[in-house]
Length: 116
Image (cartoon, rainbow, N blue to C red; front, side):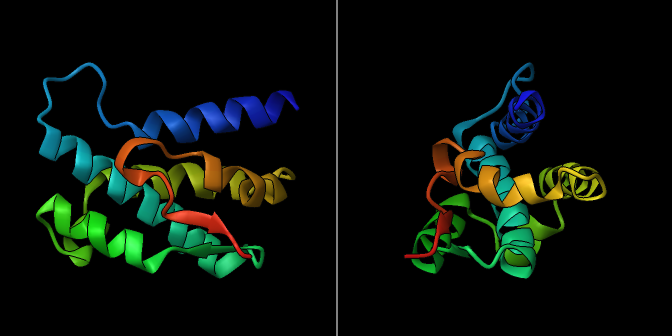
């Protein structure tokens, strides 16, 4: 379970945006939503037990002030996607489908959810 803790910490760190830089609330929204979108895209493709709450995602995209395409083109999306790719390339890839719903807080919370 040590890996799960490290992986969750890495995913959570990316989901919170740049902690050391001066950021506005708008920057935080964009960073958190973009990270959650990367997780959601992976979950949709690889995790049959997960889904994306499309209504919550649409609300958060609107709140971000950017389009879904702009968020997917962002550095925050790319960073989260790269972390996921790194973990997915290991023998711990199955853990991603367990971790992703819990990996995002703030504005990214509740975007990737378990199927009912």
